[in-house]
Amino acid sequence: MQRRILLKLIWMSALATLSTRTFGFGIQQNVQNDLSLLKSIYRPTPAMRAVGSRYLHSLDAQPSIGQLLKFAGIQDASTPRQLISAFEAQRKADFEANNIAILDGWIVARAEASICAILSQ
Amino acid sequence: MLIDFREYDSTDPIECDICIVGGGAAGVTIARTLAGSSLSVVLLESGGLDPDFDTQMLANYKNVGDYLIEMCRLRFLGGTTNHWRGASAPFSALDMSVRSWVPDSGWPIGRQDLEPYYRASHELLELGNYEYGYPLPSNEAWRFPDYENGLVNRLYRRRLTPINFGTDFREELDSAANVRLLYNAIVVNINANANADSIETVSIRTHEGKTNQVRAKRFVLAVGAMETPRMLLLSNDVQQEGLGNGNDMVGRYFMMHPHANIGTVAYDSSEFAAHLTRGQEENVDLISIVGFSELAQAQKEVLSASVQTVLLPDPDSGRAAAKRIAGDLKKLDWPDDFGEELMRVLMDLDDIAADAFGSSSSADSSGSARLWVQSEQSPNPDSRVMLDTKTDALGMRKTVVDCRLHEIDHKTIRMLGEIYGSETARLGLGRVKLEDWVIADSMSWPANLSGGCHHLGSARMSADPAKGVVDVNCQVHGINNLHIASSAVFPAGSDVNPTMTIVALSLRLTNYLQQVL
Image (cartoon, rainbow over all chains, first blue to last red; front, side, top):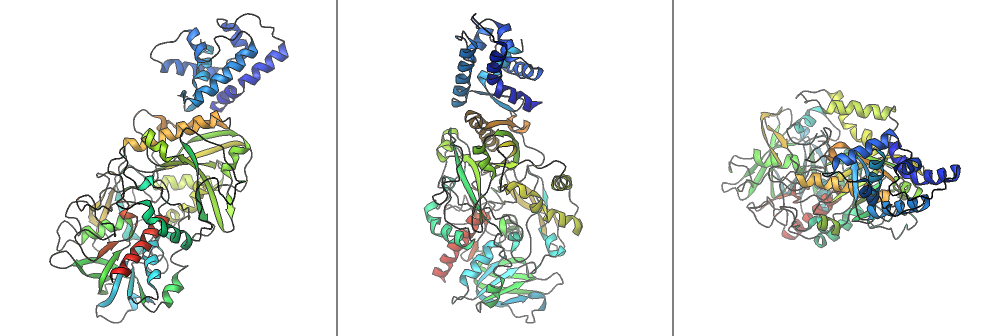
């Protein structure tokens, strides 16, 4: 189950791209506050929600959705492609800066943890 | 000349220039180096040429510390090299330096002092090219990921058939006219003069009760980091606190190398899979590990440590089953008279645990692997080898081992796991899941924490008699003709396997003895 979480995290960008191609999402609106759109791209699983919940539980103060989107690096994305690209960049930057979280033993970037946290709500 | 002491006829004391106690890597190295010289040498081995149960039981001890300590010291000619796996590498300069963040760290000699002896040790162990850096000048095609954030690739070398000091050098010792190897000769006391500043003889006996004494100009204790303090503490007829123990340092700073599975990596990269393959130079395996750079150790204030990736065995395999069984056996509080069968199982542990240093000759570009860490243990005066109240079959008090770990030991492993996991993800190689004990907020260790059979410290080297047992020449402080040759003298233990350094120090000591005699 845990490995599935990671595989999901690793491949979610690809999945999002696939979803866009498959279903022809013509997303025009800003994703910043559109939780349903985010969920349609990243299709949360119970395991991802669990990771997200653990992340939120580990924080002293509960962040807003806007803050989590910022942590994930996607607050300014307006299209799925931008979102995916921005998320990948943030994910890599987090690992470069050792900006990581350890959730249930797995080492994840804060960007990844943030996405999971959003999806857990 | 090889002599079975049980069949030795004379009762006259045995005279020689140098008496070496212990026929393992250190003792045999010194004896064979002196072969053909003008010095007469007696090498005493408590066991025989093959293992026997009664002698092996003399090494039994009580463990009350943080590790699960394996019964791995072998008491017959060749000592523990009868079952070592051969992984070898020299210490780094930092390993031997004073580190402000590691209390009581630092050797009184530098890495450069050991360099010529490391080269000689490397040659003696037949380890191929003297190359331990990365990438290998002679094998640049064998490439690993470019880790950053304080991680570097390193190498172990391992002869496919590791040198066995009991069998590989036996003929050489037998034919040396100036070397007498007395086996089945158990040292029961080191006899000092009235001032306890010089050793006159050592008393030896057989299981059957035959006794004698060996008189020498110089004595060398080459019996490892558990037996060395035992023999010094037991030899208390003149110096009541034990020989060389005027400052209560004998037995302290005992260390091992924490060995443990810290997690799992799910990888998806042929570049990563290179870690799982052996490099090879004729008869030598090259084993890749990833560890902290010297700079990172200083910046992060951690110890020397490295992680090796090991392919996950099939959980249903016989080897895995054997390992589970062995793990269960090792949790037992061993009775004094545990049977030969159990001993055989324990002696076979190295083979069972071969995975720990066994890489595959090929690996798929994706899969799962175990993360196996081997770390330095910080020097700790409260980590000790002491005398037990119980005695062995010869009436000698046994040892109690209380090997204690510190917060920095756990911090080192946790940080290595986190950075390794983060780097593996950053480079897109795979993802890491760490074990609960690794990421626990407070210091936590797995129940099966192994010390890797690497017993270090307990008679540490220091220029200051108040802070160590031996001086820079491995001579016991205050005793003008007693030396120690083993990992017992390590003031700090690095994270690398100790045999190459034991041999290097033994060669250095031999050089010193040749100069002074």
